[in-house]
Length: 193
Image 1 (cartoon, one colour):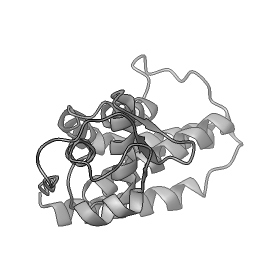
Image 2 (cartoon, rainbow, N blue to C red):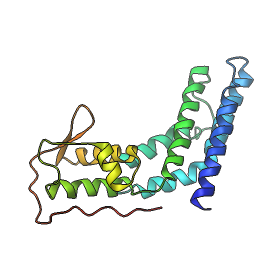
Image 3 (spheres, one colour):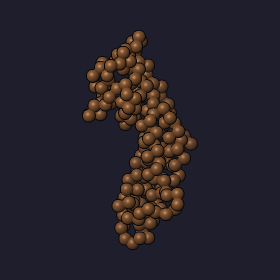
Image 4 (cartoon, rainbow, N blue to C red):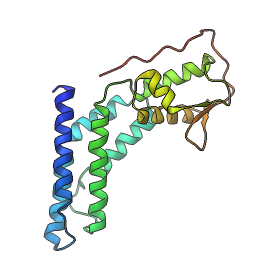
């Protein structure tokens, strides 16, 4: 299946799911159980693709954790029994399914992976493109590498978590004590479909 067709199918699944979610009612229990069924039926066909995305995120701890959390939140219980059948639990499940489908849709967008962006930032810091203590802005990097800002934020989280750099309270990366490399430029990450 091509990326364009998969994105179109994801959009259709999300629209269909959203329209069915708005028709849920807290009573009676049958309608509530139907809501769980609708939510899981919207997510289940996309779990293999999410598992693929999880595998592709091997170079990014934050991206792996994100995909694992998204998958865990939408997967039906293994026992087949619901832990809770409250309306609040159903609303939480619906929010998780929306986030899951939106994440899959976002992953269809072209651009470098989170791991590639993180490596680009590390190289740029080592090359002296970002001076120690200088904030690195998400929008600037997103524009440079041709990536959605959310991927850049996750990449900066990985770079910050690596210990060589720190994240500021504003979510910007502030480089610290990094010796510049001999090269003058940081290579641009390659774009993967």
